[in-house]
Length: 200
Image (tube, rainbow, N blue to C red; front, side, top):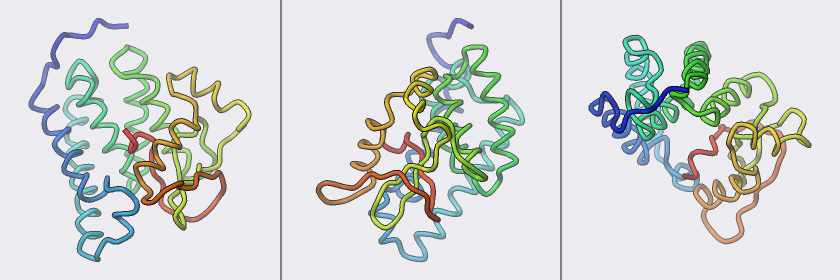
């Protein structure tokens, strides 16, 4: 594992990534109960923001590879992951990013938890996930996307540095759902996917 510098090498890139994710709190990162009341213009703005952010990330990784902690710091690297998780319109690019992130994790420039979240995001396009980081938003509920070997889920999560699934589900529910006592269930259904990091 490499020793991390005290400051990222490219604070300017970090600021751009973080700024994009902060701006997205008004569009694609808005809580589900806010998105549910979105106008057609809001939906178009969110879509355009995802496309623009994905293109910015594509340019960045073409030049620098995965923007890890050495290049952009912890916050910048987390922002890059947040953008990668939303690039569902380009699954081939997500898989390329996953390979880059795996290598960054091996050399200590990214965390295994970050890798696990993007790994799950790639898996849910065609089957069950492995680490339980992806959820459906459907009919006022946060629903865990199907998981392979659910009995071993929390052990696998612990192995990659993720907290127990029920803790993250509760945080997601508080972030995304309005009103007391939001429901958190595990089932299958056709709805958008959200990542557990949105609760942070």
